[in-house]
Length: 391
Ligand SMILES: Cc1ncc(COP(=O)(O)O)c(C=O)c1O
Image (cartoon, rainbow, N blue to C red):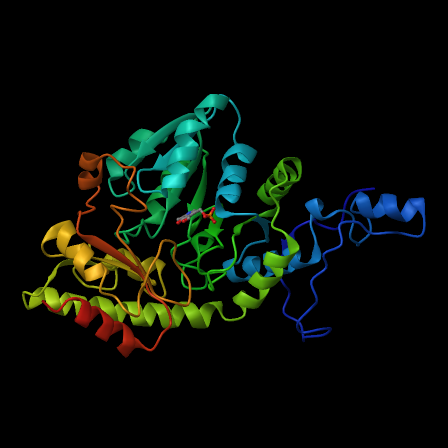
């Protein structure tokens, strides 16, 4: 008999709520059945029921079902971290002899994975600039089986024209995966624009409270089955407790994301005002500002302009550190997407390993400060920045 019960969460049908509104977390690692036949049938997926948590568990499927519903996907598969999710996409869907085309603007951990590990297993890695149409077409040909982009990018919040990437990939029969960690659904939904896989480090705004490490990929069944099988073989499933916390977090995802994006837009305008009046700000990077290079593209792909912004302090690194060390509300920390506003200096954190000339070519100034804006009352953030910037 064919398996009929999927081991991952599927998009929820809208139906009136029934049962516990806050289901308990099941931590059991094994489950007893009255007969050999029942245990066999559950294990084969012919009957509903729990079997072994590396094959899926209730809290994980609840989380996956909610993410899939938000993304408009058939389902989702969750992982122990964002990197585990990316590992599953790259190594679960590619084989030796395939090529992958990777955007130049990806998380440093992705860069390390694709440059260190994929070639060891016979996967060719090509790079391209998603903002240069010529570079996209040069990198993608029939050998490429997967095209991977991140949008919006870190830390300059560039917004990729997904349609251009999807069209180029389609012409060559390649899949497109999008790391959408910097803007969650429903504010950005890559699958609506033809992407095959939408991935998140759920450690960031999906979790939203800086207390969970997780990753998740939404897609169609054909690809989810391969990702789930890879997860089963490699074991990087999200554990029940963080999955349970994530279900709770998702209840407020849209509220948090919209509030953070509203704060970010106001802060970007405030900082841009300082720039225009000759203050301590040399440049502001936020797609909600009309002078951002992707402002028009952002209007197509984003329902709000996101919760991350970056600004260059006039006077370079020394002045940036002086401003940074004076924050009293904003926390000096890496990561993003929490309810609290965090600031980092990319030169010291996310881009510390990048050679200086490459960093400059990527437009990352030494005096750049990145903010992951939270949901605090706006005035407290503006006055923190204003005070930190007084001479
Ligand atoms: C854009 C992006 N993708 C993936 C990751 C990796 O996620 P995780 O730290 O959950 O493994 C990160 C982490 O910062 C990230 O910023």
